[in-house]
Length: 190
Image 1 (cartoon, rainbow, N blue to C red):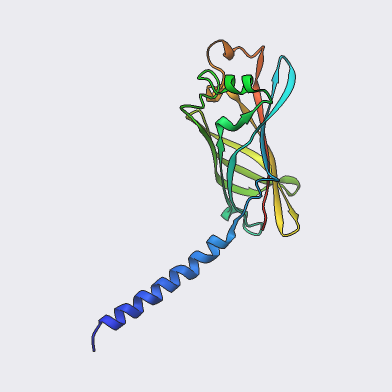
Image 2: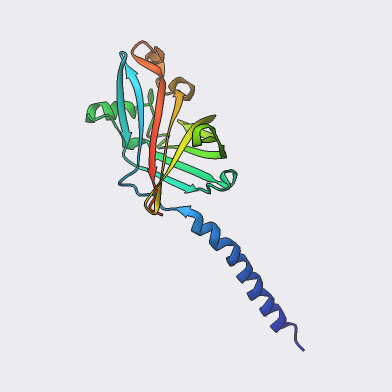
């Protein structure tokens, strides 16, 4: 008896086993509804709150409310899509002193831990990278069911100067405050 049919059968069985384990992981990834989702930055300019949106971003969420520690999230933000509502201001914030969008066109967040928090929220820990600088961050996350989908909402407070956003004369926080709130609302379709 040749060992070739046994090897072929073993290959089929092991391929089937890999697929059986991989498919639930793929199925767990949630599809983001970009039209209903948003990421914005809120900051104070001369002590007046300003909110500007990132028009393009991609969120990958694999969430398990029964086992939040198995959940994962990553978000990639298109920095040149930052919109202050004025073309001249939009060009200005892409310059080297601010986002340096030509050299650093993407900002990202990757979760490293998700655990149950107070008041039905979840505590998210991860790494935020802006303008080539990476720092550990954490924030509370609210998750709500909506039809067949879910809504993930939160606010991540950061200091812009920790990421070199506002160099040179713009390090002075009397014009633009150091504190920035990154607000997000990600709606999933499943």
